[in-house]
Amino acid sequence: MRRLSVALVFLAGAMMLPGLLVAEDILTICGCPPNACPAGYTEFASGTTPLATGCTGGCAPGVTPWWRQCTRCGDGTCRAGVESNSNCATDCCGSNTPCNQIRPTTANEYCRRFKTDNGSWGNWQWITPTSYNSLWCSDAVHHLCHSHAQCSTTESICADVVNEPHWKTLPASCP
Image (tube, rainbow, N blue to C red; front, top):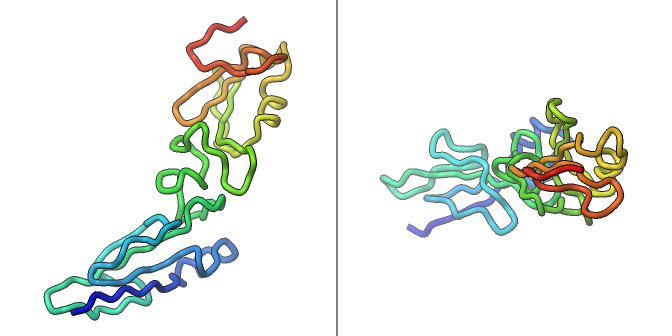
């Protein structure tokens, strides 16, 4: 039997997250088994039964129908409930986002979180070097050797408020 794959818009997800998704953001692909997610999409769910909305059996006897759901990863939008830092670190800022990853659709936003000395880490955020230097590494009294930045698993400390580079990777000596 000829294998058929049909890409359908997964409307149930769009109804649960109004205003966040557009038709081409989420695809449901059905088949015996289904094709992989197309280029530019990442799988976030798959299974056999129950079949996803829009999928019908239609497989040869003894062949289990499958479905997979794909999201458009890499476009700069982190879709809540669908994409996460685990399955789409290019869009969703967090501990899995590489230090040199620039947020898609921006020229220079990087994923970082910050703290002061032994304080708690703040939330992960997309932020420009100009912003984080101004907010976390510009004051010799309050920031120098007191502000910490983290990207992925790398921790840095504000080591120079005047000259570049402002940040040194730990363990580093601080003036």
